[in-house]
Length: 91
Image 1 (cartoon, one colour):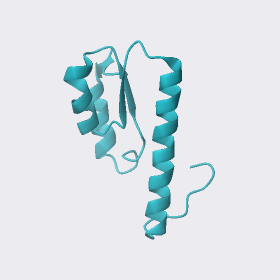
Image 2 (cartoon, one colour):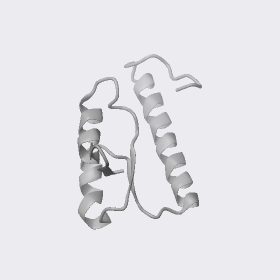
Image 3 (cartoon, rainbow, N blue to C red):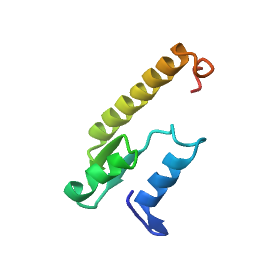
Image 4 (cartoon, rainbow, N blue to C red):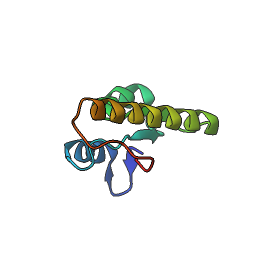
């Protein structure tokens, strides 16, 4: 969520993206803030998707599945290029 009680969600996205250990974690932003003002900014900061509250549960599950599948495809591509260890079932 972009409206965190202890800080700004964009700050969290920026820190995740800047961390070598955390930059590959896919993030989906779910926010009550204006979609038009914040969607592009969230994607620029590394979010994989932006959902506007209130969120339909079926839509959220579909987006989560799509983001996870993209992460799996990216991991396989990186492995096939010889850059990392092979992906495991737990990845």
